[in-house]
Image (cartoon, rainbow, N blue to C red; front, side, top):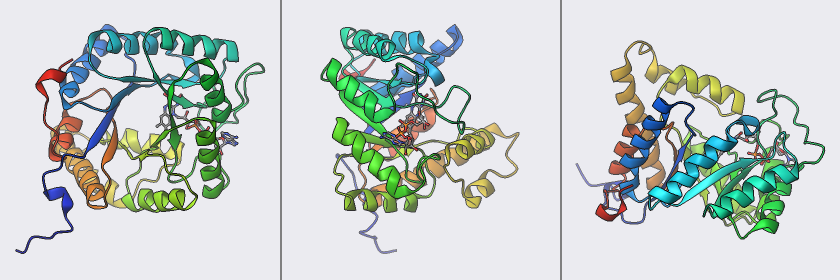
Length: 300
Ligand code: FAD
């Protein structure tokens, strides 16, 4: 069979960049699971690793502890997620200052979901930041943080239109954001068309595709529904009948994510953000397919 020059994913690449997202552990057992994942993925030299901030600031201490430990014990560059839900400006500023003092230079700045859950009306704290744009401006006043924000290829569920959503992204950039990570998606066309519209709107910052390896289809599909990310029928079909077959599910999850990521490479995408769910194996395998190899001096 003739070699297809359009499959650039099949040539050895040295221009692929990855970043990994973790969530803060809530038990000693989950803590060892997280650190096992960090130790396994660190030698792949990610550009940065990020640690989420629980809904309504519920993991404030745990996020701080995890990020600080990454700074102290690894060569990785951590980014701390931070939201402004249910907190005064003074509280949020205090968290941000503590990050700066701990050596954290990168914040993923988000509005966050209302305390009552995704889909309910967001009401800012009376003394709080009004939205993510306002939060970014506040962070810029505190210190010279690198600021990453969210982006929504299928628009944020509360945004009336995709154009308005892109206007909000623009406002976040004007306030100081220099990178965006997308909500996860499964149809690459959605992301590629979004990228076209974002670029046509004059936005030039990197928009990293957020890739979620589907560890548990039912869970992912229910989360996707809440966040406004569509789940195509073909994806449901691929996991059909595997509810009690963890081993096969994992193989399917790896192949689905590999297919998605390699197709994006073939469309010229070089930077990827992985929602790891604190599990390394699938993400490690996909990074290997992308051509990444462990660097000896980068172990955590
Ligand atoms: P925004 O971009 O702020 O948009 C939210 C809504 O506000 C949109 O509908 C927008 O149109 C509207 N809006 C109107 N005017 C403005 C304006 N002037 N400025 C800004 N927005 C305006 N949640 C957590 O609780 N913790 C996390 O760690 C976390 N990490 C995330 C990481 C990524 C990569 C993504 C994509 C999401 C993450 N979330 C997290 C979820 C996020 O908090 C929710 O989706 C939340 O509902 C919106 O916050 P945002 O900053 O993503 O949205």
